[in-house]
Length: 330
Image 1: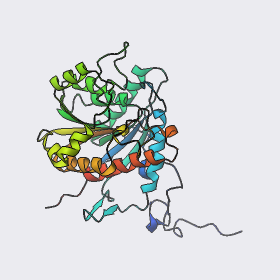
Image 2 (image 1 turned 45 degrees about the horizontal axis):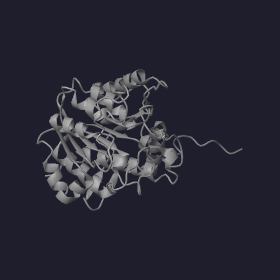
Image 3 (image 1 turned 90 degrees about the horizontal axis):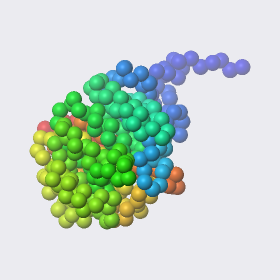
């Protein structure tokens, strides 16, 4: 019988990298977001950013399946978990998400099937726990209704401006008695006293919101641009429209992207953004503003046969986190 290898012969078992003897390759182990540490005690979060899953899709009007979004995005994110020394971007000549950036995964909010109020309350509890710890909340949905409890959780955090990147305005007040579905979140956000305005980008085609919804949105402080308008203006001009000094909450619906690159969503809409268009907007926002919260919603793995939507979502989130925590230069 071969002698057991001790921790010393493995270079120590407590580390997570090549230097410790553990390769921890993407297809091995537990699929936390980016294979970051799992923290199950929400009173013991000690990190710069904390990932919360919100696997709720009872707010959808068409194709369900976004409840499996957090699992799908987490699994896809392991693709980008090679090593732990950060990721070097040769275009920016920058190392992003180095070991000094502490990111943890705190698991999922407890979802109660058919009970929107309790499920949303549990999501809000998770976001509040992250905020109380001083970490940046990053919530993976779930349908876009999960933004409602996320924004509520900021009611004691000072004023925020919402940057929404989405195919749909999501400004319905009430439809068939529903006020907290995935067509309502931006209306509910605009009603909050701590929300100072919204910049809504990518809105296009036949919308879930009627004309009066657009009129109400503008009256309540929204700046609305379609994909074509964003392209005509250019990213710098679009970024200049966001109020200077605003603290930004980013909500990103995956259907903002063209379904040719993001088919795995419940309400696909052709004519959407391409990858670098969104990335440049997010990088510009992170350079100019304090980003105080993030959610990414509407990824539906069952409609994503090649897994490209989940990979896109994970890559966008990791890039955005890299931009938010980028080392300060000059």
